[in-house]
Image 1 (cartoon, rainbow, N blue to C red):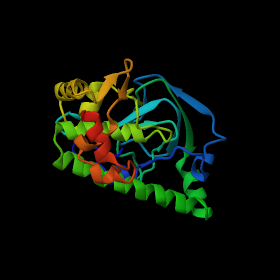
Image 2 (cartoon, rainbow, N blue to C red; image 1 turned 90 degrees about the vertical axis):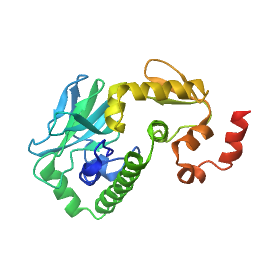
Image 3 (spheres, rainbow, N blue to C red; image 1 turned 135 degrees about the horizontal axis):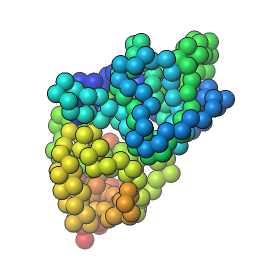
Image 4 (tube, rainbow, N blue to C red; image 1 turned 60 degrees about the vertical axis):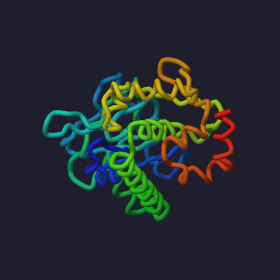
Length: 250
């Protein structure tokens, strides 16, 4: 996603990943395709490979990334079940995709995809709507990386992971973090030490608590929103946010 530590790649990623959790015309294209399995750490494709296929994530998690000229890894997004990856406006992939956990995917040829999009009045609006959403996500990431401090970045990341679950609650919500702290650091443009320090700081404030090796529980949702610097974005989503945050401080 779409979000990068050097965000001059944002527009490329915005055209590369289509998100969605509900069954759709787009996802229905993959239903007849066989399921392929990737072990944790196994690559799905590499940056520069011929872009011959698109993939739907059926189960598990992927990281997408680029390697910049000095050898550093820039993670541009994390994908989960329901996401579609591999759409490219060029003849090659603009990034690499690698399994974080044991993952299952379905593969569809680019030729078949383009034919379906061209012939389906129902499919075209869905594809463009999802690309539009990705452009909005790209703009949000530019703000995060260019204007936000370390604490705001980590809080924004946690909120984004929380809101990817359509059934999430705001009170004692569980956020799953299958990726490593190094992954998060490479995604947010921070060091692993800074990410760990920010997570400890949030825990000390009582905003979150550990809920397992790869999970945290959000205890004070309102304060997390305020610390993210995204009050306006979540204002309509959480009415009475300021009053809620005030109660949490008591």
